[in-house]
Length: 135
Image 1 (cartoon, helix red, strand yellow):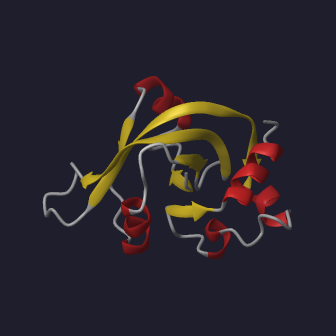
Image 2 (image 1 turned 180 degrees about the vertical axis):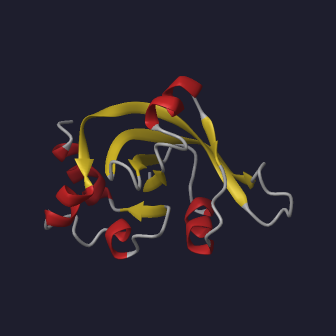
């Protein structure tokens, strides 16, 4: 199993909206590096749902339920999307400040490439985030 971090602006699509929807196409990603990450995702992989811009914190766990397929919001056919489903909210959100201050997390891809909306997470980083979240 691989692990990922996927960012969403909560005023555009929040964790609560995601949970209410039940599953969602992770569409609209137009960065080539983020697209490569999504192409590498497999069914059953886990991803952290991260509120970007507002909140700046990991708030939930998602599962990849459909691998890369054409993005329904792209008329050009150039971009792909995956489908995700909520697994559970984090007991306690893990903030960007906490991530940057933690020696095990300070070199995460999301810290080094802060503009990247979909990034890989190592198994050790994933376990540490869950630990900080009280899981």
